[in-house]
Image (cartoon, rainbow, N blue to C red; front, side):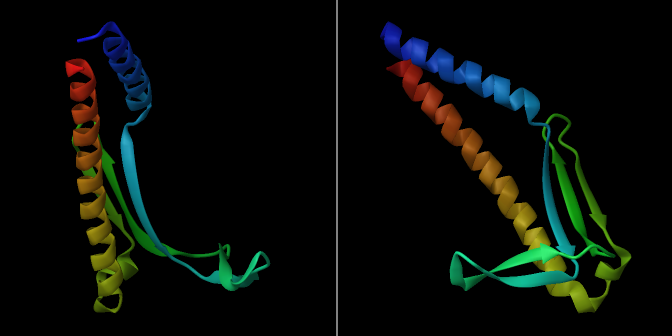
Length: 118
């Protein structure tokens, strides 16, 4: 392996470690609340949604990378059939997020392996 590739791999690895040390928890949030809807002044075909202060219901899932724990919080109102589609959508996002994290880690490992081999 050439010295340049090894230096590049070491640089990427050092940066990666520095960022991963700060990364402890992935949060997936789904909130149902009242929203103020405005037309986007930059694009008349788009809208800007702004949450209105007040009560909200929702779901929160936290994936803790260091401990491997997963915590799931859910408003009591989200337990009924009325919000079943929202809950299913949230759980789908959780599964997709976990897969994205795994894919990204594999891509980083593959990149570093390739750099190390030169």
